[in-house]
Length: 442
Image (cartoon, rainbow, N blue to C red):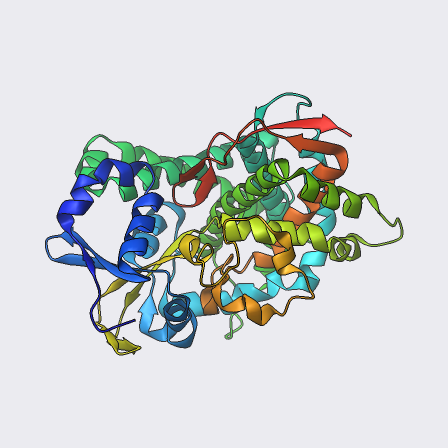
């Protein structure tokens, strides 16, 4: 990375505005090809943002010098307005305090308690698959992932209607946020038209639902061995517990972050398996060999090739495909000054497909993640759950859930598709677009 960074003009941004609104990834790719692994985009009124797919710079920002950077206001203010100030949206001392408190609930040993719960929900949801018919699989996986989070969090306290309502509100809040991100010039209109007000009214309703669930649990003598029990039992350094408002923020964020990314990754994995029947057959052979006296966690550890298929799907289609950081101090990297206030946009999507890092980067090859391969060969440019102290706290939970879901589905069905390509829809996360798959009973 040299001292001067190429600039993409504001005129070029305006000229491509409609393309960027629909799918910004081809525009980013063209600029990376033309200008190299780091370039600046002029956003008008003297505002610039740096785009990067340089893995070394990304490690520098997210890990080595993470204290000199924080998330942008898009994540800490705009998103927090709808889902509260929890682990995903908090920054500084508040984030560190919450991370230390919540981290133990996501320890592998604690998660083992939830495996049966996760497995139950997956098996219930798989029964909803209509066989031998092309169906858009994303909504199905979205329901599955949401219910897994709901049951793991608070054991489905209340009725199915409550869960459906929470899911509807979570998704409505995201839709409003996406509009605000993609069309910042319409922000005034979103307020004037009442869209923001009506979304905030919905999120208030969700907070009331969650508050009732928390109060009922506090008054209950029953142990549920779920995440809510663990969060209620957690204590700060001074011995105090989380208050209801903070608990609601954290639960809302676990819903939002926990179901969206997982449902995307599950759907992309199944689409890739449909396009590669020989790889799907290898998964089937692996998951067919069930040993009855193994615990679910031991069974998961046997599904190594299934895990590799998910890891490779998350390389090609990382659900968290972009992230950002703002420099809160002047910083240096390879002779280039990153001034305080600079916004850096990190493209995990581009890093995961970079020809300097991966052989045949566009080929779906789960063998890249074979245990025989030294992790050093890819660890520095593979970011499926982010990196550094703010790496996704639920990465083990998500991986257990995805291995159980893919193994159960492939054991029961042969997945096929008539689609020649995998259409994508980049929103807050990277989604598959119209994921039409068919499931033939085996």
